[in-house]
Image (tube, rainbow, N blue to C red; front, side, top):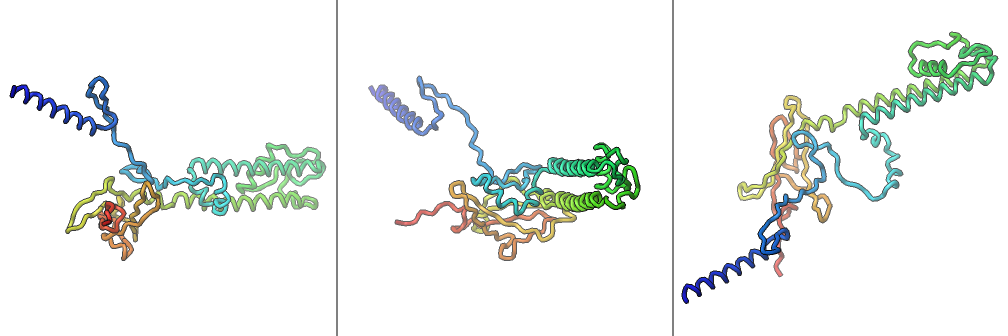
Length: 293
């Protein structure tokens, strides 16, 4: 009887423990037909506000924030169209600019043909009298005018100085003005595109993982930053830490004690620098504190 009672008590304790374990199991637990199979699931990935999508876990500095104003935002962007265009892909931007340049050469070629056909008997150097210039020759002349590679009219060196050729002179003038302005824009575009700060910032690397540890009685959040081009580091580099909650996407500044943010948070990146934030009760990283009732 004692053995039976002990066995029964052990079975009851086992059943109760199994029940408690069953209640504690995650929803993926399969209890059909008393099966004890589990589904292995990887922890959900936390979406990043700034993706680490370069070598050494760096970022392309693209903040994943969008707006819901749709096309209305273009009313604002058109006031800063140069910087908007500067952010586009270099290859696509170059193709677009070459297309614009080629289109304008074709437009002026058509204008030269239209001018020479207006009075076929008038010889202004584009075509011969009675034989106006054709589009192929007009395109070559337009290309020559735009690039100023030498200069000469198709059928005469100075016929456009003749009376009655003022329209041709006007066309040449506007095409040269357009060419100078476009060349200046190209220079500014490629200079800013090649010298943008994101390209230099690619050499500044930081630790892939942050650490939280206790030091001198303080709980500290730390990351490490270093400039790969240590001989010629970024001068007067500054650092700021921000925390963004998933439930309340308002950026909150995290104070740094090293380097001291009251002194500007300056870094000397030729040597690995440790950036430290003290997780005190005022920090966004501090767990919620229950207020007494």
